[in-house]
Structures are given as C-alpha cells and as structure tokens.
Length: 248
Length: 317
Image (cartoon, rainbow over all chains, first blue to last red; front, top):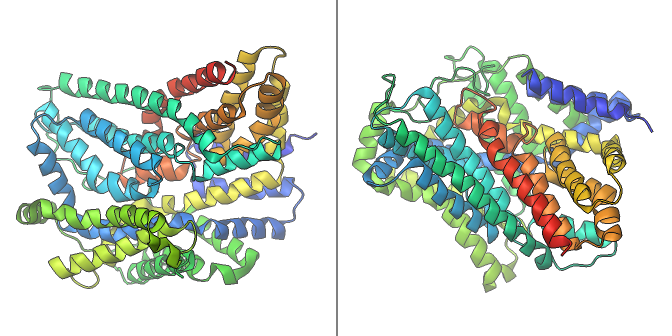
C-alpha cells in the first residue's frame, strides 16, 4: 500500500499552519491529491468542478445578507445593545448560556437552520454580548476582551448546534449512521440511535456553560480596570486589519 | 413545486447584482476583481448545471486565482454612520427586531406547519428541503416588510448585502471548496489508508484502548476532512464495527451515535470546517482568523473525553 495520497493532507496542514491563502492551499491540495490518485489534469479539474457544483447548497445561506445589512443600516446592532443594557442583571455569560440552551433545543427538534452566524450571531447575539460585557466592566472594553466575547459568541452557536442536532432523528448524520450500520447487518431505527446523542448534549451544556460562567467571572473581576478609551464596540466598527476577508 | 433550483436562481441573481455594483464602484481600487469574483459565483449558481465538470472546474480555478493572488478587496458601499444608526435605533426602538425575526419565524413555523399539518400534502416544496425554501421565503418577506415600513432606496438591500459579503470575502466560498476537496480525498483512497493506519495502532485485548483509538481517530480524521460525515464510514469500517461491536460486543447504536459526536469535537478544532470556524471570524471581523477555534478547544477536548467515557461505560454495560 502506498501512503502517497496523504501528501495532499500534508499540504493542507502546512498551508493552514503558515496562514497561506486557504483558497490556493485547497486548490493545490486538490490537484496534487487527484494526480497522485492517478487522474490526469483534465479529470482532476472536472472532478473538482463537479463536486463544487454539487455543493452549491452551501452558498444559499448568503441570501440573508441583504436583510441583515438593511437592518444594520437602521440600527439593529445598536438596538440589540440597548435592549441588553436595559436588563440590570444581564451578563455576557448568562446571555450566551441562554443562547446555548435555545440553540440546542431548537436543533434537537429539527430547527437547526433557523439560527446561525449570519442570521443571529452577527446582528443580535454578538452585539448583545458586547453590550453586556461593557456593563460588567463598567465602561468601554479593550480590543482583546471584545475579541474574546465575539469569539465566544460564535463558539456558543457552534457548540449548541453540533450537540443538539443529532438528537433530531431525521438529520443527515443520523441517517448516515443508520445506513452505515445497516451495511453490516445492524438494522436500527433512527430514533434508537438519536437518543444516544442526549448524554453528550448534556455534557456539552455543562462543559461549555461552565466556561461561559468563567467568562463572566473574568469580565466582572476586570470591572473598574476598564482600559483604553475605545469607543463603543459593535462588530462593524472594529478596524478590518488582518481579518480573514477580502483585504488579504 | 418550489425546488432548490429556485433558490440557486435567487442567490445567483443576488451575486450578479453584487458583481454589477462592484464593477460600478469607483471608490474601490479592486472593483474589477470583486466584480469578476462575485460574477463567477453568480454564473455557478445560475448556470452551474450547464457548464459541465471541466467548465465548473475552470470556474473554481478562477475563483481561487482571484482570491489567492489578492485581486479582490474590501469595498465601502454607501450606508449609514454610527451616529445615524444610534438615532434610528432611538426612534424605532424594539420594533426593529420584528423584521429580523421574520426569517427565523418563517423557517421555524413554516417547517413545523409543513411537516405536522395537512399543508405538507400539497407538495409545494422539494422533499426534505422545505426549511431552505422557507428561508428564502422569509428573506423576501423581510425585505418587503422593511420596504413597506422604512422605505429605503431601491438599491439599499443590494448595497448593504455587498457591504457584508465584501467583509467576508473569499471565506464565503471556501466551505464549498473544502467540500469539493473532500471528494478528491475520497477518490484518492485517503479514507482507506487512514482506516488501515488506525486499525494497525490498536493494541489487542483492551476494550478501553480500542474505544480511545476509535474516538480519537474520529476526532482527528474529522479535523483533516473538515466534517465528521467523511470520517464516520471509515472509522466504523476500520474499528467501530469489526472490533468494538463484533469482537467486544458493544452496543452498535451507542458506538455509532457517540462515535459521530466524538467527530464533532474535531469539527470544533479545525480550520477545514471553514463555514463554522473561519466564516464567523470573518463575519464578526475578528483580528485572529483562528479566534473562534481557539475559543472552542477548551470545550472540545473535555467533551471528547466525555464521549470516550460514554462509549466505554454505556456500550459495554
């Protein structure tokens, strides 16, 4: 057996580690892997293109951007922050724990596409968490703290989604498990498999919830030490330096 | 019947509008690069099925070249200032949330109604794709509501959408590229090699160590492939079924379900899962493109341990 096809993986690992442009890294890895698999260049490009076309459903989610952008134009992020400042006891950690629970429960009943990074995290959750953090600190927060709160907002969405969705028996991963087991002669109902996602879902809530509570402790302990005269953070007005987007 | 094809057309028209407005944007030095990049996305969504494999492949090479060689750049489409936004927010108050809720509410209640009432029997939407279709319906309803209420200029939704998509940049296309890379990995037999390697390192006779290798193999192979779906059949064939279920008599439902979730722990830790880890970093304009991953590692590792323990104690009771 030859290990040569693993060269493509090595390329990806090195490329990501060196922070080279992922679009080039992925394309190079695809071409190298295909050639090592014995395809000619024409076949490699055709296979790559066809697979790209088969996965266009991934691009559908961007149709929400005009709505999110329009609402930002009329102050949605500012209003989200105002709303959270109105709750005296609101903290970034508690808010995110609530969102974690909401995300797990909706995903568990099959409504995983109703929230997400473009639909809920950018316009609502992140600005709310930032406003709560400012309240906890008793003033504007420094850039590193803002960065951490935003990262935790996105992370909470992922954890809630991943460890809620498999409780829903009609989701793709459960179907895949069922079909795989079936090929070995184990014929199980999807529901028999899906119930075994519940212990992990509870563990995920406890572990990530604890980390969010620790985030709160850090934010509250830093109160009064509020730093740098950074004006009012919202996701849009941080400078675009070094972000993953188009400018690099 | 409304199918995914309709959504591809809707998204394609949106990207085509982004491309046209990019081309006309004289404030952006890289306007032609942006126009070409979003134009190629529009072409893919509108006509991908007619381009053939090689045509689509050239299209993808074009996207990668434009992004990889720095030919696209962030734009500054006309929008409101922070001060204007504050004053709009003061005037409109919490009513601003209503249009924002139209999209999730349409998807949520629409999906429930379609699946659990007689509505589903009309067959309006493509089977199993109703939530995506309803997402599109929600978007159109929300835009209509905003126009009826706040009367923005006709181009405003496209300009605001372009502002956001340019902030995300090529990260918006990367998840689709990675999915395509996974297909080539599979064609080259990467899965078989990884499966054989994993099976080779397993010490004989220890259930616990076998569970450990199975769960960690799921997580690691998921990190390489970017999603657990590609890893699961490989690990199940190499370790899960022959050793854990057949040799040691483990419960197949638990080995399968929790094994998959061990893979999800890997998803939290890899840039290969771009739509979960890199796209939000771009959307939230983080300085560190790996910021989301770093925030997730301390959740993913203890959770992986929890999954190993769940398999060990529940499947072999």
